[in-house]
Length: 73
Image 1 (cartoon, helix red, strand yellow):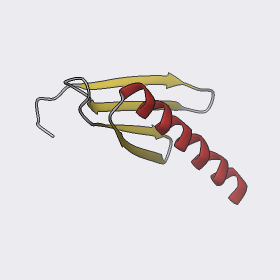
Image 2: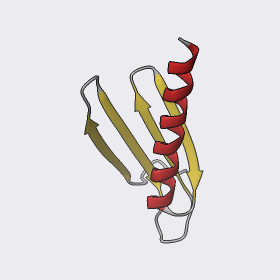
Image 3: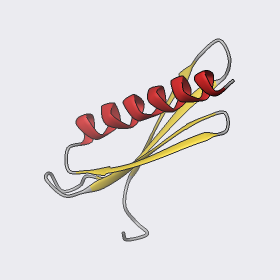
Image 4: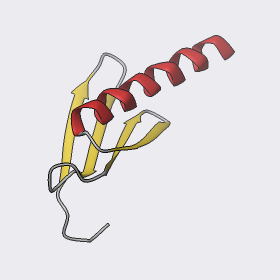
């Protein structure tokens, strides 16, 4: 990626921390981008072509990771 590309940041407060979503790329329309989702010590990275779908996919994977982490305890 080029250094001058746009980054979107979304912060979602929760009772136990903050979910941070960073989206890079997706411009011009139809080009690929990356979404980084962070929550406490878990970081998820997803690549895709559609910004909204990629953000939803990253949140789904974060949810799966949290559920797996809870099962391990």
